[in-house]
Amino acid sequence: MAVAAGRAKLAGMTTTKDMRAAGGENFLEGKLLIAMPGMADPHFEKSVIFMCAHSAEGAMGIMINKPVAGLSFHDLMRKLELQVSPDTPNFPILYGGPVETGRGFVLHSGDYESSEATLPVSEDVSLTATLDILRAMADGRGPEHAIFALGYAGWTAGQIEDEILRNGWIHCDSDPEILFDAELEAKWSTALRKLGIDASGLSAHAGHA
Image 1 (cartoon, rainbow, N blue to C red):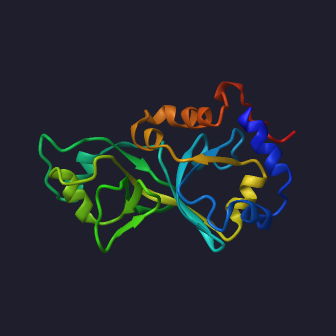
Image 2 (image 1 turned 30 degrees about the vertical axis):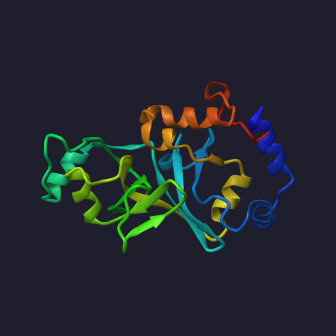
């Protein structure tokens, strides 16, 4: 089972240095970070996070499966006094994490680029945080696939590695179908299945034996 293999691999790694030696300096960048049962912080319970940046100095990611209650893309555009049309896509605004919750981020497919504001994270996923991309999305010039989130998740140097070693998180390669297409409530279990893990068989004590 993939989760057993993953834990066996982690069992031989007892420090952040070991993890970086095995996976590289930015081994989480462009990956999906999946909360394990028993996550102590309620902000991250059953969360799936797309990792946008990771280095020895810390990490940053966007939660991709938690909606902001009662707020859609059309609602947000009206609040920003930006025009929408009947053809403008409408989708839930996501809670990206507890840091800078008033700041918006668009994770999107690589077919859109703002020369000054787009950060390519991987070959097929980029991050943009300007009003220009919202205007482009409103009038049909935006990326083929996109999600919009308020706030982000951030970790200081070595913090996310420590949390992984304490079995708070597991990670896997990113999948555009999970990132952009899956139902929000299904993303956590779908991401676990990508690792061969059945979410229904996990308990809050998984990984702590």
